[in-house]
Image 1 (cartoon, rainbow, N blue to C red):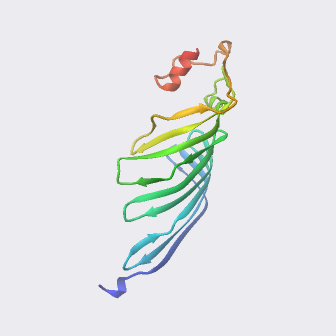
Image 2 (cartoon, rainbow, N blue to C red):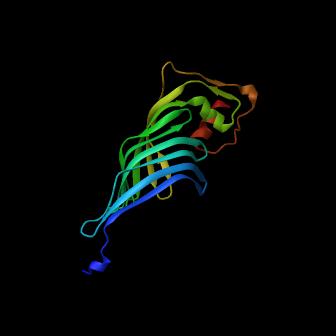
Image 3 (cartoon, rainbow, N blue to C red):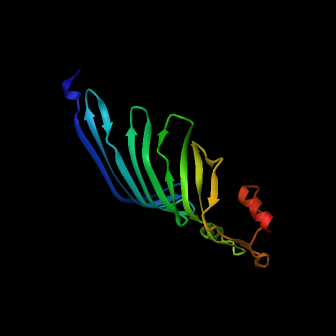
Length: 190
């Protein structure tokens, strides 16, 4: 082996307050620091890192995203030990997971806490529905190359419960909605 082509040392990359857009998703305030040791005998070893994003806009605001993760270059994977975000007046916290780039699907279990129902209705712009209360639960999120799906999730009302009130005179519900779950609920209420 040629000693002139051997590298060793530490490489550090610091990102501070980045903003950008990927397709329809925008973000602001992305900050992270990633450090790696280069060793000619052992390869590249990436140290555990942290990531913070002030706001991600995915059609609804996801704020104060924080993650602790380790990049596994050898296996094309990322081990995420902590992931949390604020959304709809509450929080989403993920169970630790491994995101494997080589697999077709990765599953993340999100724990929803104190998600405010009225904020969900406000996003729909539906003046005919009023909701009070919050929900908590578990949402298994499956991520594949083309889709993100939630199948078998469970949400329950937080004490002391809440109220769903539909005002039929408001005329705010469009009965010509698609055949998805939200469309079914909208048609049932109308």
